Length: 175
Ligand code: GNR
Ligand code: NI
Image (tube, rainbow, N blue to C red):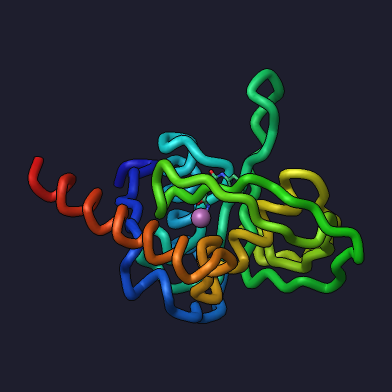
């Protein structure tokens, strides 16, 4: 079995991106393989995060790496993540999503969050995230609840983006 495999990233609109995902019941070898594949797929894309449903796996798991290009990589796997605290201060970030290619829009979210989660060894962690990490973990947790960043935009903007993505999917299916 190859050590890592690139997985196909689903593009919006797709019913699998709208589902509430199931908790991971057992952090086993299959989950660790999924996490490795997701990291490989994220770095290949490239992106700073990737959630289970984006590769068609409706489980509560995501990977992130928001390290600077000139720094050592910081791959993280978060399983069954829960927000335990959010700051009152908010932050606006221009967000993108690998499932909504070439679309970037401003989204306002809490500037800092604490999250509890399991790692690939099934060990519990609780950690505070800020800057791009805070935005990314909230964006990824949203994916596990069937929410996309375009759900925070106006109905009209969302409809325009969805139309654009349907066109993109048709073009990709042709070639
Ligand atoms: O690669 C990504 N970049 C990004 C930029 C700003 C806010 C959130 C993100 S996450 C995104 C990858 C992705 O779609 N994860 O679900
Ligand atoms: Ni995304």
